[in-house]
Length: 367
Image (cartoon, rainbow, N blue to C red; front, side):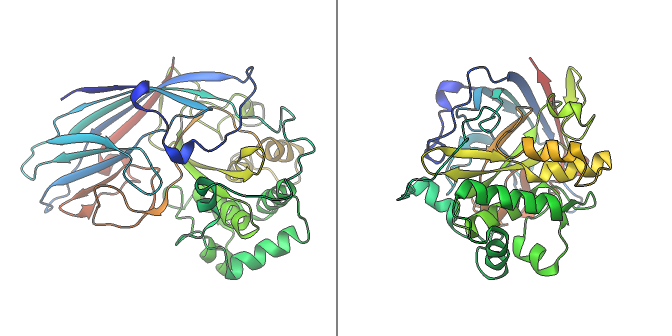
């Protein structure tokens, strides 16, 4: 039942072929081996087929999937991109009479720092006079169930950016507003549900990475800037952020790191004539909470400055999918986002946010 898929069979899908930032050749690179071990735990009283959907990483200019290997006692398993975002998915199925539901997935991925702002590539950026976005980019201006662009979202966006017309400056103003006004809340389940309208309406400007970076995405779209979340997982310790934080930005610097809670949502926005630009407003909030820092602290400001237009490569991206239908279609549809594995037994979902109850263990090792 063992299957090995090499990088040649994992070429990036159309959704990821849109013009991207080309990092400096001197950008730091890392190669990670990421292993997922599943022993799905079926709740008492549950019956029926067991179905599992596992998010897989894409390949593009800042990460390269070298291989995907999977093995298990499943009835069938295959990789599909059959969904509106082209989100790579490993689907596995077990018969209702299966005694165990085992699956092991091993990925080898090379990642590269994205630092267009630090490299000066965005200095003096001016948008073209007549902007025409490709179809791939246009979809990231549209609203979804959790990413509204009208009503209170539009009101906030207009107030934040005012009369500014430069999209790079507008994006920076949105990032800075989030840094100044939003906080991380560790009590939130998983990475948060990213319901931007609810966050702004209630005035409870708190949450985890999906909540905070979804606010950036929604405000950017409402300001006419294509933007999207990228759901992924941390793979190692942040080196560049390490001078500010001992543990806010990744796992301990060991040979093998446990990544059961390493899921992390980042964001990016699109500049016509340039490409996609990285941003991570949520990790500024995480830094503040972890290190007990104020917004005004010089280290907070340094982290905020770095995380607008730059990413460190201790992380791997899966997809940009929001409010969409997995394939094959599960009972729960649409799915809010796809940063965690998702499974159903007889149509009833398992708790993806609890590794022990779900039955998974994730580890990463830098090669």
